[in-house]
Length: 130
Image (cartoon, rainbow, N blue to C red; front, side):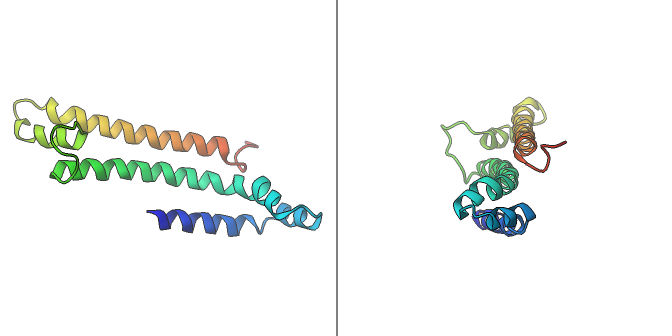
């Protein structure tokens, strides 16, 4: 998923460097590293944070899926996907063996996505004035 991060960072950078305040800073003689840190980085970091939290959710789902299929973490190590797979044969009599690990995965992914949303709201300079 790394190329997606690079594409997003590059496109956000190219968009942010065309802003009027960046050109004004350049005209007044501000050095490039200061323009990047002060003006461009705050505009780029919010988008990358959101993508990172979405990618974290996908990583959790992929890890649980691989363990569910038997391709992930081996038996003595506890993992939610392995717990789902172990409860698969008992689903009619002991439904909670598969239900609660599934709910835990869902809650964790929603929490990570809400954390990313909160970080975006806190870090995005375009939303600070609201």
